[in-house]
Image 1: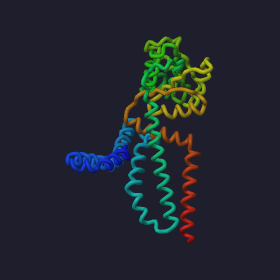
Image 2: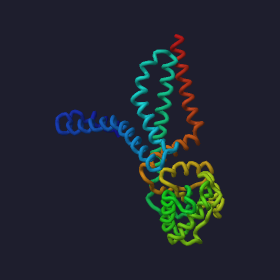
Image 3: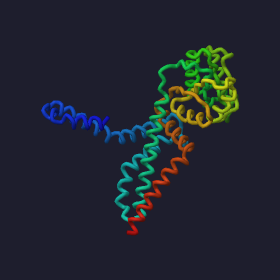
Image 4: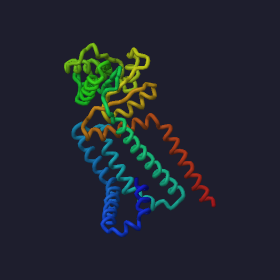
Length: 304
């Protein structure tokens, strides 16, 4: 879009010059755009830091809840402190290290942007009626025998989709973990039945203890050879669930249940870390290859 506007302005520059008000509007738009671009990193740092504090206040201090604040601090260090380190890298080794770390940071941030964009795209659905055969609700932990608010949102989304897909069965997927008195699937099914869902339309998968197993064991319960499958989980978890399903050869679409904004940011970072664990070899190869090129180029210059 920016390139198109640049060529459009260049093409009609003579006509535009004769209209001061158009030049004024274009100048104002340019200033606003530049200001937004410059302010965005700062706003991002503040937003993740503030939301990180909210996560700690509401969810407690534990490693997984510190991701938002840690990301904010690392981004600040990279944007505000790291450029100054470049002045200290007068030797060949220091320069190489600075360039390699900078490339790695930019590469990871670019991956995160693409991951977030892809995650949002996978949440966009024009219709709920998918002529589904099975709607799989992924478990997320219970308190004793009761579903948590996070899991409740997933079940409610599954029930909503069930009403739009009259031929579908609802698979509640989740085994029994530490601190749980019964398998998650039993608690999920009980909640759905209390909400008026016919128990004949509910299938319980009670062995899984991870997302990968949720998908694997739920697929084994499906009688059709090529079923139409809908996966329901929390919005920030949809994209990684779809990636895991693809790895298992399961064709499906994903629907996300909403959760609180402060929790979503922190969880999105956790999901991105999970994505990196799934694909780290590919990205390590890219960073390693570029690092080798940088080292060889610097050595050639140094030897000259």
